Length: 240
Image (cartoon, rainbow, N blue to C red):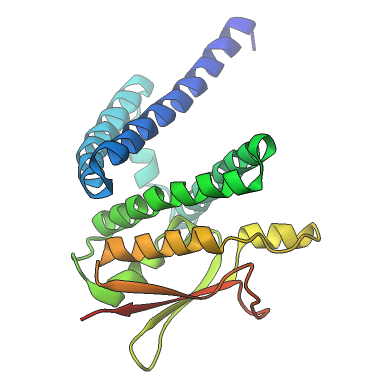
């Protein structure tokens, strides 16, 4: 590839990077200025419009057909390929999360990195829950059945192994049987990453976004001791 061609290719990829950051900045600043609930309403409107604009413009530029607002080649991927692509997207999401954590930790230390991490989850979890509700057509205030369904469609569900069960008293329990992050640490001979503080924020806000009546309790999460069968476990109940 000639130098000008390579420069253009790099510029295209960097335009994607800048667009992602700029979009995220708009969302984060809206949260700061107006609160998470109003920001999520704004994101739904802005995100729907932005997605349609991006798909239409890129497909037109590249000569790709659009079907029902989606790129035709993506619509017609076979199920296995689509699942593989979704998993790759989820792994990339987790990798981006990881490199940001490592970058902050390298410069500022573990404690500040955990503060940033927990703050990010307080915004991302409600966003993810809202997107899952919208895409899955889950009813508002759908209770624990809606939460169980939503948990099955998180990005984590594509790359981790989890178990979701209802107990005899009606409570919902989610157990993370295999966690990609913790498994990677085990392979390196490291102790579990102490993710409980982030997990409390993550699962509490996710459940609350699905139904504000849902209460989340941590059964155990590193640095808590846990059995070999699972890494972390969370119990959800519904306040009547």
